[in-house]
Length: 197
Image (tube, rainbow, N blue to C red):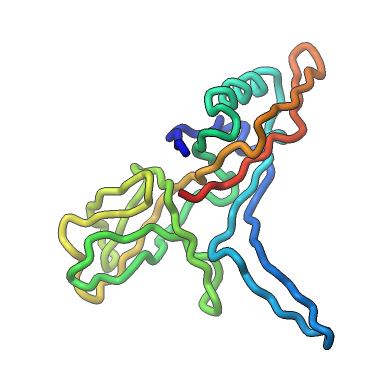
């Protein structure tokens, strides 16, 4: 597998559709009660970029992008128009030893929050605070791991604010394009799926 650190055309992505998907097995017992099992620890996002195409120029940009990625072969970056940032997200507590922490985004309240690992942050957007004070770190844009020069103090709360992209690939090896007029094109379905490296 190969990853291209390049973002899908942003203006097209922001007009697309999609969101998270879960894999849950539901078995209804003879009594009518249910047994449920979540097969994935993390949601997997799916998108349809076809909704974002508004012109022949948009279609040409997607066609070039698709060909350069060789269809499903190479993964790339996708900007989710609804969910692409975290603000003061708790990423850990200092213990006086650890210098590396994974960026995560928290969903939900205190009842049963979901922590999503952020693996493709926009490195220059990352602001990390230790005990509420901005602290210099290095950020790996391919893993989402932030590294401190010296370990944060024992018990210090570590938070991060950041923008991020989703690593995806095309979920098809074929584009079905229709030229609807002189300056308009349409591709009803250009499916994308999140990849996990």
